[in-house]
Amino acid sequence: MEDVEKTVNDAKTKWDEIVEYVTGPELWFNITIGAVKIILILLIAFLVIRIGRGVITRFFANKRRGPFQISQRREATLNKLVINTLSYVVYFVAFIMILDTFTLDIAALLAGAGVAGLAIGFGAQNLVRDVISGFFIIFEDQFSVGDYIRTSGVEGFVEEVGLRTCKVKAWTGEVHILPNGNVTQVTNFSMHNSIAVVDVSIAYEEDIEKAEKVISELLKELPSRYESMINVPELLGVQSLGASDVVMRIMSEVNPMEHWVIARMIRKEVKNRLDQEGIEIPFPRMVLYSREDQNNLPQNPDE
Image 1 (cartoon, rainbow, N blue to C red):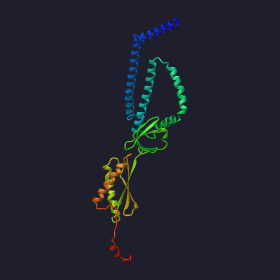
Image 2 (cartoon, one colour; image 1 turned 60 degrees about the vertical axis):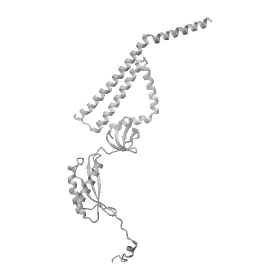
Image 3 (tube, rainbow, N blue to C red; image 1 turned 45 degrees about the horizontal axis):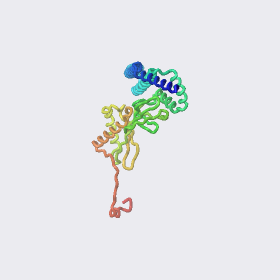
Image 4 (cartoon, helix red, strand yellow; image 1 turned 90 degrees about the vertical axis):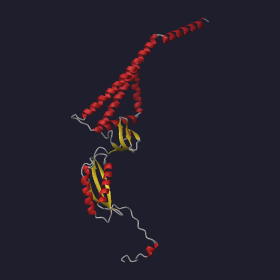
């Protein structure tokens, strides 16, 4: 009986200590101090990222005017990559500092995280491959933010290049997120000047030499109208002989990714000029004979 009473008294004493601790000022003082520390840590992390973004952006902006200049496309890629890296580092440091406010053993946690990271690394070979591939994509400048590329079955503008993934936005609006390890072959349309190719059809009945002269004179006028043209477009001559037309080909060197726009403008300009000169652009024709007309056709081809 005495043992039961002793156990009850011990439990009551423990409960009183817990209630006193919970309702006492020391606990709430420590909670308040911890909450203030966490808020300050998050606020400082936010300010560091905000200021760091401004400094990084200003640094790359100054590079445009410095002796070691970088292209605008590479600047956009490195700018975003450095900002993302800064954010990850600051968030990690803030997380460690928050854990420290809870009086946790940070050294033991980091040691355990290192062992766990090593174990995960053996199983995360694809992740390691993506990171290594991302490093070489950025280091070799295979493509940058704003470039128009075709890779891994997708085609579009590069929106972001990271160490693990890259984002490619199609012209119809879809955003494709590709692991860098899957980017094995890339066609970059933005690194060099593009070529606009336009085929113009002329009717067989027209004077081909006259059509060539008219088109050549028009092409000399186009660079002054369209700044994207690097030089005067070139009329290569007769490209092919179709069923009802003579096809002539025009080529024009233009700024990167401007070949589609310039090709449409060239077609429009050539169409208007040929109409002014009375030169016919052919269209498919079909000749029909009635049964009566067919009976009246001459049997001898020489007749």
